[in-house]
Image 1 (tube, rainbow, N blue to C red):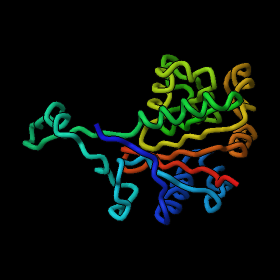
Image 2 (spheres, rainbow, N blue to C red; image 1 turned 120 degrees about the vertical axis):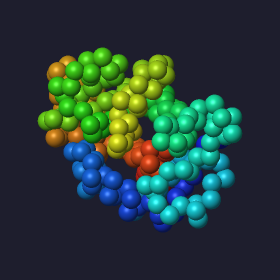
Image 3 (cartoon, rainbow, N blue to C red; image 1 turned 90 degrees about the horizontal axis):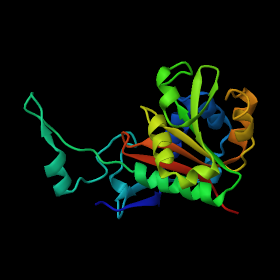
Image 4 (cartoon, rainbow, N blue to C red; image 1 turned 60 degrees about the vertical axis):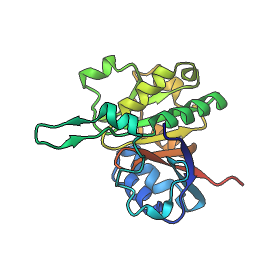
Length: 219
């Protein structure tokens, strides 16, 4: 299989990242206003040895080569005569990053915006994820003890991975206990607290094939 590594991007990601947050939900918009993009670094999950000079658009897919054996096994011909080829992504690598963060930060929490669901959607009751809401927005989240349950991490990232993807790795678990005792309803102040304690922010890129990760510069 294709080996994926985290590669720092230089000069091509700041504008994309800013616009992505501007176009998101309430938490994204708070981050768009408060996140010091210029004082951090942005990296991407990309195939090993990837040539950054080939990147002209962070919206465009086709960055992960599909091995011949996968192409032969999973491609299928359409009635129109065309061929649907398999599409690989880096979700497994993101799951590893999330799990490592939860293992290393016993007061941490990972929050994902769900930009397609509403709190009253029936499927959420059986989603297998931790959920809180703000107004008509839904958020899926993980706490440190979830690092022992890879399936929950997978379900949570999958549930949040609609047409837009925004995840936050938060250093201080200031809202988790509250959300588990107050009908899982957050306030604007809760979202502001999340944004103020960011360790990393993840957004979707390359037409759903991968992710960009912003982190503050270490001093």
